[in-house]
Length: 137
Image (cartoon, helix red, strand yellow):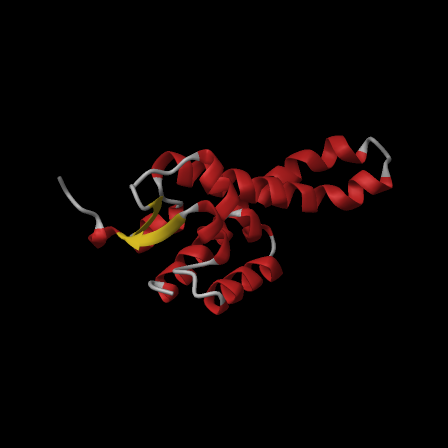
């Protein structure tokens, strides 16, 4: 669990950003969805928006730049062993970040199974590194 505290701070920053984005999307969708008079949609759309915004945020930022806003501020990046990051890898490694409970299990299982990082990092073939570990060619 290298960089645990740095990763935790980056995650907290990212969750603040995701919360702000989710709030913005929920407020935009509230008025049109309220006219539908569908209780099921009105009750569940905030959770659906949270899940989608979380996946989209982490997947796009990590696949395009190897960093989220939190990782950029803290000085971390994510990649596979060859320095490459794809949308598929970014999506897989972030599946558990939608809610706290799956993420906690991901971290604990990664530690119990002696993964270098989280379990879903192992599934995706990725890990998080400090910027100062970057090799310059």
